[in-house]
Image 1: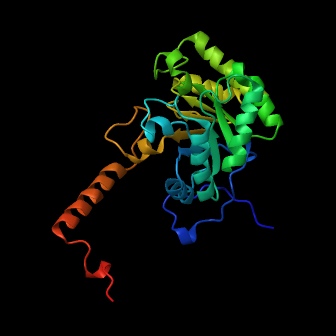
Image 2: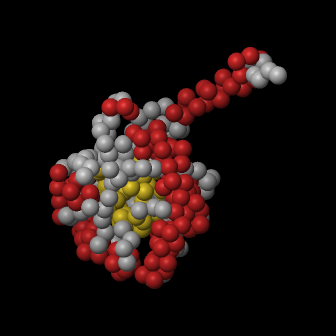
Length: 286
């Protein structure tokens, strides 16, 4: 029997020396929370980056509807379709061996009824190979979550700033700042847990409120702009890797990938124009 070991690979571990890993599963959520082992999640929208992050040892890959404003040129996530999400999630799922692939259900694909949510989630699971779906909302979508989980579809909830509702929220603003709003957030989180959600993403929530939610839940919380007293962290990979000159206040740029890519493209253009590339080593003879 193969021994189960953590899916996390220590930073800097040479590939040949990396410990054996297992696919992150639903059962790992509560076990990791109880052990105090922080969860790591990054977005991924294609197979190339998904494979890199999977090799690095990330626990979960989120195929977010943030593909809309990060990759597809939209102003926000709202125009993204279910078909677009299925294609992106399929490419990510095919490229991974260890990370759990979580796919967003986009705006308009689940809100109307639990039945609509099931139809969309089933299409996502069958069409992409993702292992879980993520949907936004609390008590108002608890029945949706219950039907999905009872039907064998793992669900991750999303509270706080819910980007699909940004027109109602007045833009990308910190949520749950008042006592009443913080209490409602707690009730929403408990409702998701009761409905069977495996974890809850908390976005742009004051750190003390996020800490309180994490304390009252048996399932993990995964924060983005929610402080450190949550059970894990998620970032949009372009913010994490420094693909642009700007990133949100809650994000940290762990690299300067955008600048490196720009420099490589600049060098390529220069060598083509100067005829330094291709050289003899890149050329086939008879």
